[in-house]
Length: 139
Image (tube, rainbow, N blue to C red; front, top):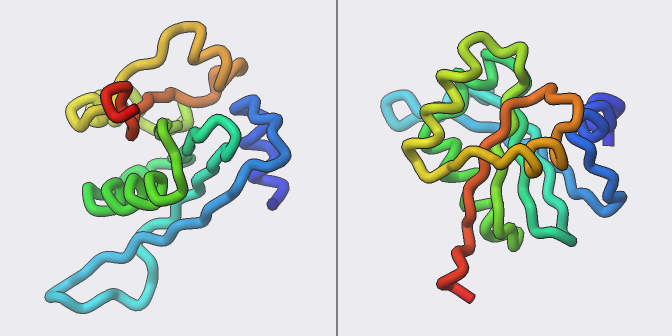
């Protein structure tokens, strides 16, 4: 885990030493050919104890690269890893952060309660939404 990861985990109040880190590269297809360079890189974290999966959007470049297919691929990865809840964490310094968060509400993400927000980001460095991958009906 890099020092940047440790800072983020501290900002988001994750104390679990078993936290798994994912670096995910999204590629863009042009005329059915993959570009040589990844279009976007995403840092994700999975807490295997609580089965929570966190996607961090640290800047506007990453947000712009976060396409529908990138979201679907990351959700598939999270589900395959056994996650039951996925959180999108967008750093508050991202321009138009509130507008980006609203977009996720249309695809099944929901706002956190005040208590949930404080549990995940005591310093409020990120706007956070959640999405349940496993509904109570599935149990």
